[in-house]
Amino acid sequence: DAGVIQSPRHEVTEMGQEVTLRCKPISGHDYLFWYRQTMMRGLELLIYFNNNVPIDDSGMPEDRFSAKMPNASFSTLKIQPSEPRDSAVYFCASSLGTGMVAKNIQYFGAGTRLSVL
Amino acid sequence: AQSVAQPEDQVNVAEGNPLTVKCTYSVSGNPYLFWYVQYPNRGLQFLLKYITGDNLVKGSYGFEAEFNKSQTSFHLKKPSALVSDSALYFCAVRDGARGNNRLAFGKGNQVVVIP
Image 1 (cartoon, chains in turn orange, cyan):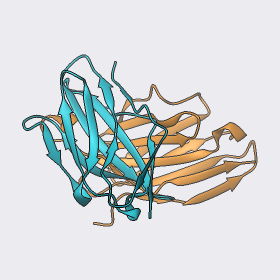
Image 2 (cartoon, one colour):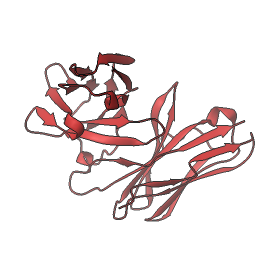
Image 3 (cartoon, helix red, strand yellow):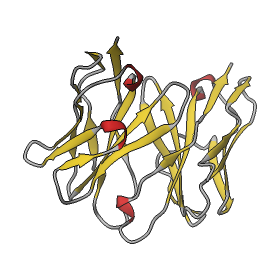
């Protein structure tokens, strides 16, 4: 398996522009997570999905952020409008939830490095 | 609430010496504990996990970790460090309650192995 695939790897945009980050989870995985990593805050969970349904979006910072999972093999994280403080590395991860889901390992993509000027 | 503390920002160790990266956790139920490693410009990679059973857990690349319930710790160890072990290491915990699938990560420890 190719692992979790994220695109683009790098994104540079200007303040106010819309940004869309993309993620393809590992085939067969039914949980998908979006994280943000910054020096100040470390790794923060933004939102996660189970079977394409958002389960917990309490980490989404504000209404400018939105995430969708239209099918089992694709998810997007959108920021509109973007601001300089959104600059970070955004990671997508997926896992297979069977039985006691808390045991299962999350597999991470390589991340998207976002710079908002 | 679930949380993890990694008290040291950076761990420096000479190549060939033992490596220890410290982690303490806080959960209300049973802890499910994980260690991940992040190399530059890469995503996090799973190293090992503790769910139940033997307190000493062995993982990838010669790493192991010991679960200590009384001290609420899950320190990562390697008997002989390699220069290639230089990376950022994250400890993470989940409360074992059914339906909880949130991982709480520590802030990470930068490990520098000196040749």
